[in-house]
Length: 526
Length: 99
Image 1 (cartoon, chains in turn green, orange):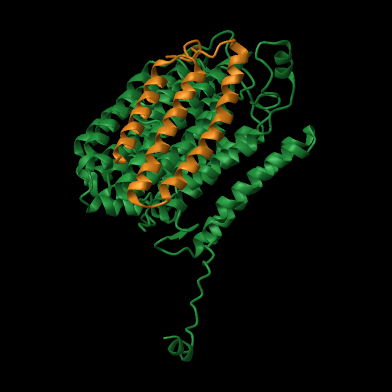
Image 2 (cartoon, rainbow over the protein chains, first blue to last red):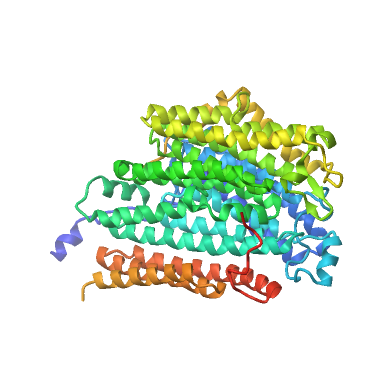
């Protein structure tokens, strides 16, 4: 035996070195996260007066750089998508679309966050550790400093969102969920004025968010027990043909989806939304309302289409019910609101219901229409919260609806812009909201969900009523004597609002290019 | 002893945690109940790793621990800030935002 072996020429061992993963696809994420870490170092080493300008430049450069890297990658991206980072990220058509959307939105959100013209020193507290109501607190309201940590926090949240909507396995998805949530919890509590409300919003968001992510995690554990893997495609394959107990599968699916629906503020899991949207500083609300919604629905779409398509018969009825609850709750409770930010929050719950209709139509059309709706809704809501931050009374933003009476007489431009945005949310033709609703409802109809579409149309008619109520209030009511003033915004806020308005108009008039891009590819199931 | 018992124990712990979140008033205790839920999940993950004969579940348990630690940092900071203002950590007293 030994002599035989000695005579044979030894086989050349195959090179077993692990192939380096293709990095090209994930450059945008790497740039964002690296800039976030650099932002933390800026906080540590630069003197206080230089931080704001450095952070703003660093953050915007990072987003633009990530956008450039993304554009460079899209030019010669493989048609079917590719896996990156040892298979934990699936960089496919929808992921690239969502990344582009998130990066574009976060430019607007960062401009709103960085603005110091509307409120001297910005919307953020100068020193978060000072107790509200003390002498030092009254001094910090007058000061022009702000906690510039908010910029790296934004970038970390953005990086988490980008990972979340490309995650190819549930563990990556969970980590990304936490990376996007933890900074948001903190950012909610950093308002310069009305700090009690702001801190209360942070506590509520944190406790409920952690509660929901525990459910999400238990869902992951059960699905891991069911399929022996957390890879979405493996779970899909296991669900398609196996003799394992369905209890594990459906219990896991239910818990997982509860966690996701919470983040997307859908239906009965929306209870945190109005409180947090109202209490958080308005630029942060804009960031949350736009970007978190995009990321969460990106995750929902991927989980449903990749892992659970084969079991859709079993769960679809439940999600029908949830979509109906979400639309009805959003539309009906939105009618009773007296605060602009809360009203927009309930409007976001109703929109989440519409989005869910598109997400449960498990067709190519359903996917592309939901992606398009996300794009339109996110830009509209970003600009709407930008406008909300302009209407101010003596003690900060005037968000009570009665204060908005007769706003058109004080500032026709702001009232006109807000009217346009509300009409887009209501889905009036020539705005992006109409096209978005049209494609989603069409996709749902062609997938045999006619009753759901009828309910959605009724709900959007009810929702249109409360948008119109604000418009009527702004144009046909006499302004109050001690009413709020409309601040003339500086370059940053103007740019952010203009971005939102232009996209809303453009996607309403010429939606073809964005629709084509949204339809550009399916999820990579590997 | 079959691994199934560990799964039952984990479900029980998770339920105790979830009920605790819903009925307790002190934010710190609520938060501890959430941590209990996360650790119940860890028990599930490790048991399933044993049943499936793969190490993935054990690795995941480490990730969950790291995430739980990060959550404690953020969560206690938020609860501390509201406690210093109000001199109470009761979630029932934080009631400015409603309707």
